[in-house]
Length: 420
Ligand SMILES: *Cc1c(COP(=O)(O)O)cnc(C)c1O
Image (cartoon, rainbow, N blue to C red; front, side, top):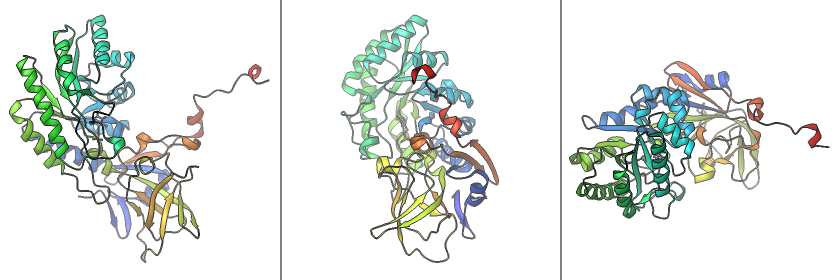
């Protein structure tokens, strides 16, 4: 089932032509398919069959509250990395007891808020954080549910900026130190050990590194068993890759089957934190071609979306498909570098793309549902894009386009006496 497809040479989101969305909501505009999000989530949950599991959707991939609301309705838990993300989950009706609170720099206020909200688990990433959480829990006389996120030192074979489970990365606790911290936590009256966690990276295209990480977690579990330190769950993190171009990521089913086969005998709840694999291919960025700028060296196609709207190409050299919203009558004769209006040479959305395009045409930058809007900014004082959810033939504006007033709402001019 595809959620974005051509019908009579026009590109649709579910049953709505993108042309209609552009007329109604303007461009640039993020467009999400409710069916695509639903199907991706349910593919994960169905693959587990009877095996005890908890899917904690990684909020940072796409944190629009309507997206979170949909996933909460489907039964998802959530992986959050800040107080803001936790507040979004609560606003969206998510169950706090199904929340894992990750992140290497949780502030005192975030820990307090997490405790007050009754999150299911804090994934601790350092000894210093353990001390802080233990102190806060003791002061409040409120038992904190915790796991340690260990760093298994495996190479996830992904872009270096999204590799997180190598010993030189800032994430997790070296697995050799973990046992010591488990002993400390086990003795503490206000800490309750829930499990072991890891997250080795994002856009993983092979199962081998995940299997290697899990085997390290299982060794740790064996050690905990010898020490009579019980746990309830193993959290394998997120990271399952998606197809942007010609990648062959493992299917969700194959991934889940691997988790089950490695973990089932342990009688532990299997937690996972997928973000990209749920959201990436459930969204696109709708944009308009504003100028054609052929030069003797290169042809530039200047669109109304830019790196501030979608930074993946600039930041990770990521490749995402760029499709015309109306299929042209004739084949492309030219290659274009598709660039935004931002004053940076790194502001491109795609390079050397064959497109038959004219000024004013609509284009869809595909696979933009994850790490798209959430990484957007106001750079160059551009208003951030609108977000729309499509459900069959219905459309819902789930985030209005920003206005200039939104941008400067928190800014103040200096008082008169300060500028003479
Ligand atoms: C980013 C992140 C995820 C999600 O990663 P995806 O590649 O989007 O699945 C899960 N867990 C943690 C701790 C993360 O930081």
